Length: 425
Picture 1 (cartoon, helix red, strand yellow):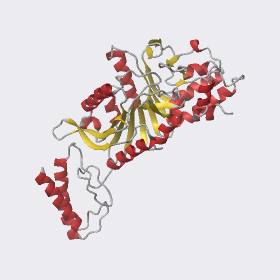
Picture 2 (cartoon, rainbow, N blue to C red):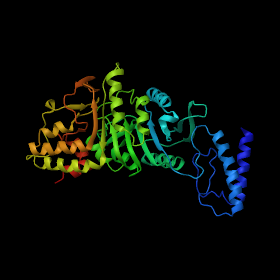
Picture 3 (spheres, rainbow, N blue to C red):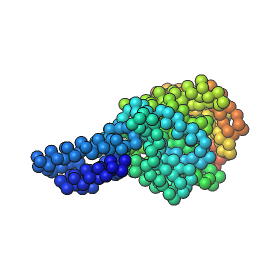
Picture 4 (cartoon, helix red, strand yellow):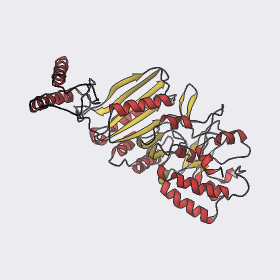
């Protein structure tokens, strides 16, 4: 290995002497981080020397690489990179199981020329970025990329930095992101901050912070391996962050996503989120007998503003007040976790109680464009009261109905973009 490394160094030295290497750009797959310029100005003789040495360098780097993949010296973009952003909190045991399932699924064939990169934060002072890939011998391994110290995983700045690092090191034609941790939709904690995702030392990212941490337009899709993030308020807040979002409107069992069957769906040419959602549902329906509860939704974010418009019309025509005194027992409950002052209810079911027939028809047509897939088991689990709830009506999205007996919660709700676009007339 040392002899090969020395020879690589010699090759790079030769390239630099003929004016090829000058540090102007990076080749992320080169294990020593050598920078190779992409535009060359050389004579015929230099071209011959360069081609010969370059071929030797590629062969050597391919032999040294821990992952069996094409080495792109020219910095070309290919495949899809999926970043898994994991904030462990008290889910470490289950995350270890998730990573094992990822390693089972992350064969070169399943990754389809792409990259699976994991950011794993066990606490504020300890986080690691690593790649899961198939090596030259056909064995899938975990390759350390870098450490992060004193970096809070629930900080928007940390999330942005991790995303920048991954984009820099893995130039790709397409990007997707899986966010794995605790989720609480938009509902606030005891301090009435709008907690949404992750948990670190008792604190979570607010929904606005999550939106701040995610760049606009980079990701083709977001997948939430977390509870209750398919709330209409959440996906609306994140509508500019990805073309599609896959999430559950209910509490997700701690086992989380069955990555053995879901992960390959994310690396197909167009990323089959609908098949991934179906595989999630089938796993909990047919295989996970300990807790056979699971639902999953795929949302097309480009249609969400149309949904807001028709919902705004329905709210405006409600007649009395935008603060409801709803018949909650009659509405379809989808999520209610322990300690929360309210549950979250099926979006279409809530709208059906206040919309006219014409409005509800138009709402349903719009929902068919927004929700491209939704699957649910017959029951879901609610940690409030440790109970199961039968699901008879399921649109794939949950919603919080404003309630006159929860004025402080309503005040926090008014900070959301969904409230501003739907309720303010």
